[in-house]
Length: 190
Image (cartoon, rainbow, N blue to C red; front, side, top):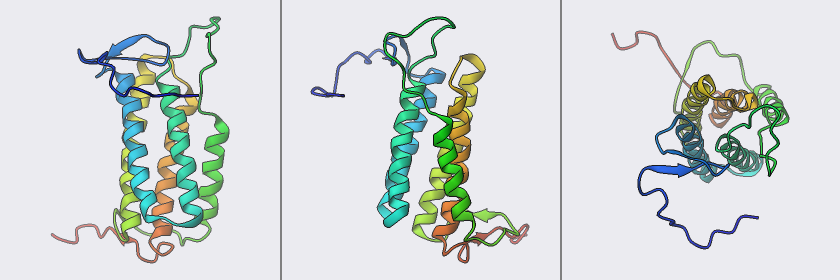
């Protein structure tokens, strides 16, 4: 159980922060950039939820919880092989990605195949979901960059990759099942 009785601690005033294992790193470290961008994504999802009702609202609520799981995963470095952590870390699982894939498949059944790239926009909700998609892609790039230097849970990258696809398909659904998608017209303004 988390208990936050005091919000400011002053421990980060010199530009460093504590990770989930208690170690301290610079606030501009690759790990903090990665989970900080996941937090930014979560805020964007919260904004999209304001536009949603029903099942989609529930799906976005689930995604926000998953993103907190992902942030917890990323802020807790993997232990060296053979070491046993004092407290088991919370890690994103392949099952969370499988759920996204099943939801993508269900939403995609409602859509006609694309014959052009989609420009972000259409409805307010679709525009918010496209912002979520692009922030998600940035988070994915930062997690991949982190994985190049440090050991991370590989399910984290897979989850973010699939989540950006989820946002894309959900944005099409939000545009009257793709009927109100804004399509790219190559060279239209030459």
